[in-house]
Image 1 (cartoon, rainbow, N blue to C red):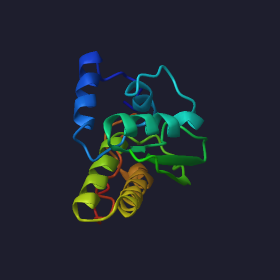
Image 2 (image 1 turned 90 degrees about the vertical axis):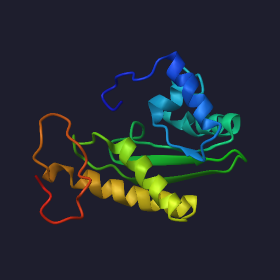
Image 3 (image 1 turned 120 degrees about the horizontal axis):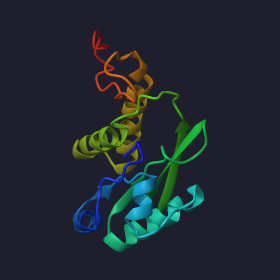
Image 4 (image 1 turned 60 degrees about the vertical axis):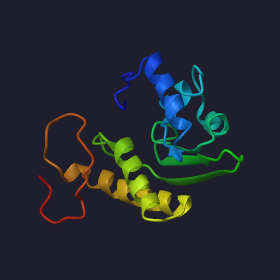
Length: 161
């Protein structure tokens, strides 16, 4: 979780391994990328290698999300395929404390774009544009306190409540 809480025990992690065997793509963040391939901790520069290991081991494309890595100004997402192809794309980090739900929202947007027939690169770009806009608009929401959600309906006028 973004909060740093561990949300999965050993049995759950084993279940993820079984699901990765039948998935087309998985979207782990850095903490998940440390746990799933069985590593204790990885440096930012080792995210490609961890993603590649997961991709090869499970025959699945891995889009490693960079929100938990990188510096204060830039986020780098990395893609690894079972065949060994690697790609990355960088974007500016958006300054806000309202990032609750970014991973789930990005994964859902990616699945939607892939389901509409886009290739991985185009689908990832579309999903990244959507989540970036949702993060950028999150400060306009006036819900709760603390770390709030991204603004899922940023594109609809009158939804800033």
